[in-house]
Image 1: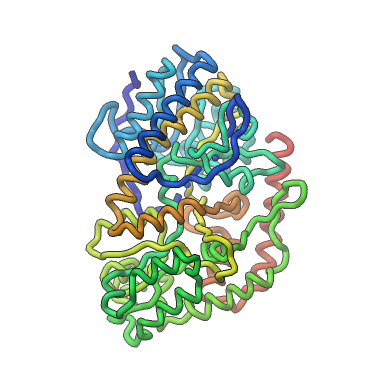
Image 2: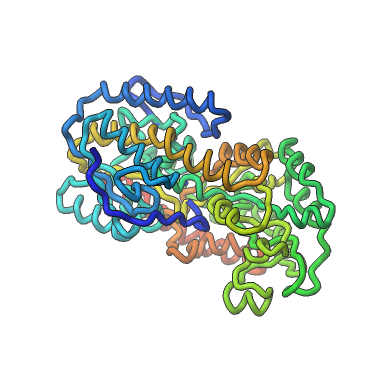
Length: 497
C-alpha cells in the first residue's frame, strides 16, 4: 500500500502556464511520435491494455520488490490529496497511478511533498552535494527548480537510460532536440506531471460576439482545418468589429496578445543549435523577426483595436476592469490569447468561447506551431547519485506510462476536452494544438524570475506586441548577454557539473 501522504488541498492553478510528451527501452529505441488525444472508448481501452502490458513487461526486466522509491516535489497535482479515492478526477487519477506502481512492482512509494520549486531544489542540491542518495525522482518547475539543479551539477542525463523511452507517447517527443546541450538531456516532460496540459498557447474567440457581429464560427474552424488560419485571417475576422471609441465600454478586437508565442507560431525559433549540437542565439536581430515585429505591433500596438499590458488600478481606470481577461468574460473582446490552463478556468465563467490554434505566418507554412511555455513548466529530473539508477530509470518509465493511462485521461480527455469546452470543433482544435507543441530552452539562460521572462525574452515579447521602437539595439545587447549565459551553461554541462 502507499505510504500515507500529507493531506493537501489540490490547487488546480488554471491560469498558469506549463508541460507535454518523449523516451528509450531496453529492447531498442522507438521512433518519436507526437502525443494525440484518444478518440472513442474502444481506442482508449486498447491504449490502456497496451500500457498495462508494457508496464508489466518492465516489471520483469529488473526486480525492485521490497525497495523504496522516493519522489520529491511540490503538491500541485503531483500527489493525490489522500491515500484513497476522493471523487476528485485528477487526485483519483494520480492515486490510481501510484497504486498500480506499488502493486505491479512490489515497492514502497515514499513521497516527499514540498511547498514549491525553491524548497525542492534546495533539498535536492543539499542532499546530492553532501553525498546522499535519498531522492530517486524530482519534480519541479523549470524556472524555480530545473535550471538551478542543472547549474549545480546534480542531475544525470536521461537520454542514455536503458528504460526511459523518449519515443513513447508519454514523453514530449521534441525535448531531445530542443533542450539538449552537447547531446545531453537532463529534463523529462510529459503527463507524469499534470501541468503538461496547462502550458500551451491558444487563441480563444468569444461566441457571443461572433453571433452579434455576424462572424461564422464554422468559418473560423474551417479556416484552421483547411490550413488557412493565418495572421491575415485573424485580422480579416477581427475587422468585423468596429474600432474602439470608448475603452471603458467598447468592444476590442484583441485582448492580451503575448508576443513570444507569435514568434513560434510563425515558424521561427529563439534558441539555435550549431553543427555540434551546442545552443546559441542570433547576435544580430534576424530580418524575419524584425518584419514580424512590424506586422504585429502595427496591429496590437493600436489601442483602438487591442487592450494590452494593464492590471489593477491602471486597468480599471483605462478599461473599466481590473484584469484584461474580464474584457473577454464580459463579452468586450473578440479574441483572447490564452493558454490551455486558462481554458479550464474560463469554463467556470459565463462566457461562451471557441478554441483555435495560434495563427500561422502564411499558408506557405507547413503546420501550426503551438508554443508551450517552459518558464513555469514542470519537468521531472533524476539526481546524479540515486541509490539504484536502474530502479529509478525503470520506475520513472513505468510511472510515465501509467500517467498516460490515468492522468492524461483525467485531465486532457475529461477535464479539458469534455468539461471545459463547448463544441466538438474545439475538441478537433485541441487535437491540432497538442500535436504541434513547441518548446524552447531559453528558460535556462535568460536570467528570468517568476515575474519576468528575463531581459532577452522581455525585449522580444514587447517588440512583438506593443512597441518596437528600440528593438534592434535592445536585441543586440540582450543577445550578447544571453550567449554569455549559454557559454556558462555549456561549460557546466561539459564539465559534468
